[in-house]
Image (cartoon, rainbow, N blue to C red; front, side, top):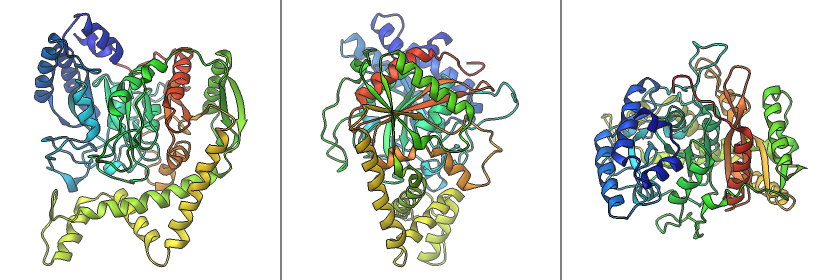
Length: 490
């Protein structure tokens, strides 16, 4: 039965259609695997009994000839998505015990497609972090181990670190993630899996705990490119409950995996070769370029001149929106409440006890840049620079069909590294943030291993609502990479 956890979503879907095994058998195998790997701390809340009920219902639907696109597939849900009757915490003490009376649109769509939910996955608190070390429910451990320092525990990346670790460890066939500045793509690279942040507006944000509303976007994380295409097809679509949800038709993303990219032009941005870029990252990037050339695509050097301003722009815009979104957590309506002598005292004590250090840091930065004396100097200027960054991409896509870059500046690092300096941590998203600011689709796929046997990822960036081309190119690169390495013991 343990072999069932090694299947991809597409393989499990096809084999269940042939009657090789049932959704209940597939789910039970994943529940046992999930229980055996609790040391990773990938899940905040396990929902094994609910998963078994959903699997039984799935088997009945299949017998009745009513199988959905994800019928019987066991998934993990990032604990940023509200799930009806199941605790939703955003990995923060301030939401401990909160059980939403409603289902987020994205998780609801997955249920409608027949998916089985194994539980709620760990993350950086309120999705703020690049290591999954800021969760109030403890750090998540990357299932990968360095061959040169096997005793060192590695971070899975963040904020969707629980999602990435669960997929890599084979304790979920796929998982939802959210990406504000790289929170799907960077952990996907660190854990050797595939993840895509779709175009802003492709997936509804309704029912997702908000971090930065103009940046947050849900997306799938899975074993390979095809599985991500299958999941995104179920997750995407217009939602009248979300004013930022685009009224666009949802293509058949899986059908885009034709394997033919002849004639496509691939942009290689010169600004993504900063001084100090590691030789290993440089080498895997050059290898990716070579794979695309051999498949008939043409690499074209492009310029994205405002890239150098992306990181400071993001860390003005995102904290500003976070400070506004997190103002609702006051101890009055839901979640944690710490009593005080006055109403103001209760607010202060609740928020001080409920929010971790990184969240407090970003709230304070955001409040500062939105204050009367600094709004024009910081926030207003950052919005203007954001527009220039988006215009850089618009001009680039007049020359090319897709853009290829590294996903992250390094492989997964140790839990005792880089954690004291927040700026060093923020630099982990230096290659993913420009895509988020421009609202473009970005996919990370594993492309090789470094000298310590750890996965390295490459990022493909596409035109707005052109995930099909991104998937098509990613499928070709995946075939060329033949990335079959898995974490030890999986």
